[in-house]
Amino acid sequence: MKLVLKMLLTAIAVVILAKILPGIYVDSYSTAVIVAIVLGLLRVFVKPLIILFTLPLTILTLGVFLFVINAGIILLADKLVDGFAVSGFWYALLFSLLLSFFQSILYSFLKEDQQKQMS
Image (cartoon, rainbow, N blue to C red):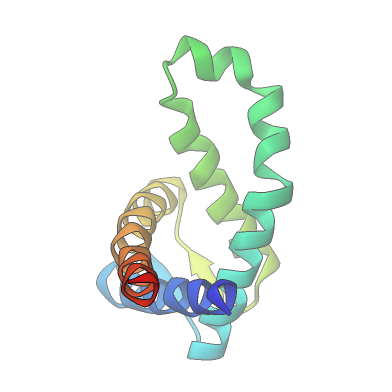
C-alpha cells in the first residue's frame, strides 16, 4: 500500500512540475502515473549499474556526477514513455532536482502518518 501511495505522490509531483517548468510536458494524469512507475523501475534497475560504471568519475567529482546520472534517467524515461517530453538536459537536471525535493516533502507526510499509527 505504501508503494502505491509513493507512486501516486510521485505522479502528483510530476504533474505539478510539468505545469511549473516550461521544458517539461505530461500528456495526462495517467501518463504521469506511468512516468512515476517507469522512473521507479529505472532507479531500481538501471541507476545502480550506471553508478557502478561511473564510480571513478563520481568519486572524482565528490558525488556531483550523480546529478548528471539523475538527469540521464529522466531523459531515458522521456524516450520510453509516450506523452512525456523533456526539452533538454538542463530541463531534465532541473526536473530531477525539483522532483527529489517534492518527493522528500510528500514522503515526509507518509512517515508522519506511520508514526501516528504506531502511537
